[in-house]
Length: 475
Image 1 (cartoon, rainbow, N blue to C red):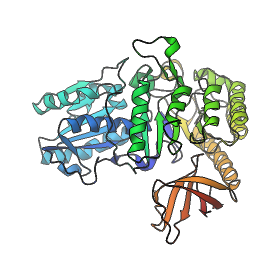
Image 2 (cartoon, one colour):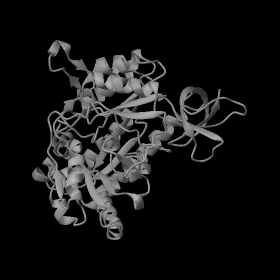
Image 3 (cartoon, rainbow, N blue to C red):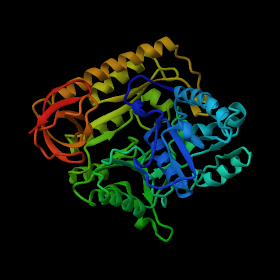
Image 4 (cartoon, one colour):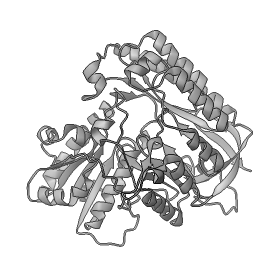
């Protein structure tokens, strides 16, 4: 298990978020569904696919769980904390089911895939268990459960990408949207459960991705984030194509960027071994491809990286950072770090701290390690670092990152950046909040009599900062 130490990963503000596809939905529905989502961006994107499938079957979404006929929890399995939260939420739903016996409760996603039918045995009130590759079967499973039959479909697929399903944008700000370009992962990092819960890599039809991004832009969206467990390994060949016709990630990125210079393009996540010079040069060639790369290092120690099956060394990673700086000097780099992996020594830990200094990360997703059932590490290694040591090392990593972030943000003071307005700041309706190309949050006051609106680009001069936020004024 990887326990969170900052609010950066898994966007903690979104955990357990409830969705409704339309603020004022004019349609009349016979039944309503309610979805809570946990975990990574892929899970939130999957909830949008589920909503589209159910909506097509005549079910309407609701944010009010009390009126729902179907209650779904879209789950994450990478962290034990996330699984514990899901189990607690299921007990909360027990009262609702007692009050309204026909209510169906389902578990979707990675936790469903990991536990399979055991979920029905362990959580007696659960009626439906559906893995990430089986959402098309939901209408059938709902019908079976309505007839009193417990339903499970956790079959993994080598083909499923949901390419033909137009996701219902759930709780969107109307400015930014996620677009899944591939599913699964082939990397088999020893600490990670994803290959076992989401299956093997498969890339989505390039034309369907471009079409979805173009549709979003025509609907008024100004930013898309291309999603995958490892986007840089995207490689699509049509059924009647050959290797010569293959679409690489660099090519896909360029095609999305060319939809319009007004459409910003982001992507997540990159594996250091797969991000190529072609990708970096494509990013450099297009102003609207955001200059931010999430490049998980996990550890700064070559020995620990080998145990993690990360397939690169400390020195190799540092050269990749050098290459990014060379081609994209203005690019921000973010990362994932695990403290206290099996057999980690203090020297290994110091290697991690030093590679943080070398890479100068803008922010990091920082965890301490504990094993997840079914992973290679759980089968091969002993989780032998005491918890208090893990927590101490993690705290040192956090403090290091906090200082790196503050130093980096201070360099922005006095500079002027192009900012995409996301909407009103949470602090005040008199302020805008937006982000730079480097994915840094900027808060700035609205101008009197100005015509700026959500989704506009504005030039903002930075005049102050914290370690996580820039403050400025419209130039």
